[in-house]
Image 1 (spheres, protein in one colour):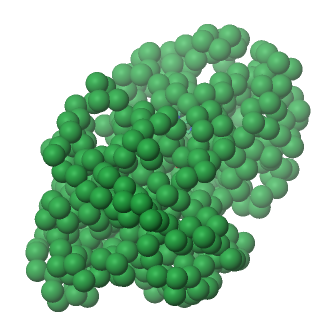
Image 2 (image 1 turned 180 degrees about the vertical axis):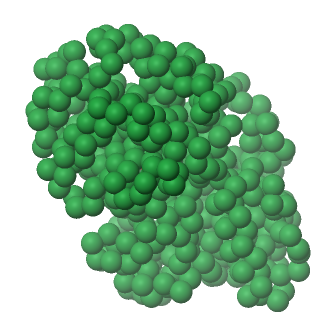
Length: 496
Ligand code: ADP
């Protein structure tokens, strides 16, 4: 079975969020199931040739964006420690700049994002053809690849290379849809007849993700609960109707994590390694974290947060209750970037509560590992959460998650109240309604257990650490779907 995996970001080459983690890791797990896999992503300015072993190939292609023929160049590398090829598509004008989708350090989108990903979508199909891959499945991820299923069924429908190719569209976050003004239809080279409410049109605009959802053969999203939620007006962000229409082809597959990168026993970013059998190192990590951020080295709980600073992450609940949270004996460490408004609010808290709060406004992988290891709890009160990865990292690091029960958080975190610890499933604290009082009550519940019953607390930590949230499980489910797609189509010859 041949699969081409398309993603606009892939660890370790370029990352803004969880999509990159998954795209960098799941191909390895899919390969273990016998899938022949190739990854394709854009060649951004930040992907330095000297940092990764990447070479320029002699493959060239041209795609039409509007009236202009745009040249494309192809670079090749491998996912680290594997023989899985990754092809980088370049066009200096589109990708030779810093930043993936926004002006660096801001939330302002590049004005030409639609052009850039119209180029990428067609470029990916061109390269697949040039390499004579004839894949069974092209696996698309998020809006940046949303036009691929559309091209596959329209402009590329007659191409021999794609006769048996089926497309899967995975939605990692429905709130990013790639919505552009209607005249960008002219840039796509697609027929204007597709610009109707059942296909590419979305409230008078052009919607890339909607195109992907309508034209792909199967849709997946990254947890079962989110798959249900996005079919409702509350979570569907205008696409719930389209998703309901395709409910029979919509699957929820929970993400997993790459334990070769996120494992406290081997993690090179942290000051002391530790694991289920020996938790001593965690204490050292906590002290190091407190020292680094000039917080008193005390035994009170340290609550960590590593997050994009956007409304999605439930930050307004925290802001609403911050002064009350500060009355509790705890320390709070936040690593995040995003909305300027939140930068200012949280920096203000750091000034007001210097012995209790540390705020680091940057994107820093190493620090993310240090905070996972050094915190006692991780706070993730998301308004919605397709899957969430941080809570899964936390589980492995013995850092007990406090979450709002939605999407992937609902599918992965079992509240300590709902099951006896001895069964091994209870692994955190959660609340259901999006309500600041419930957030506060849940934090108080967590801090109480931490301070009053160390035996139970350690049991809770160990439950999480022992659980298996590896990507192998997810990969198995994807392979089953790939097979199902192939079975639908008798012309699909290759076998797993
Ligand atoms: P989302 O994809 O919505 O941002 P996830 O929890 O699924 O949320 O994944 C977020 C990923 O990005 C995690 O790997 C997390 O550690 C990382 N991350 C988020 N913000 C930062 C930051 N400021 N510095 C380092 N890593 C970050």
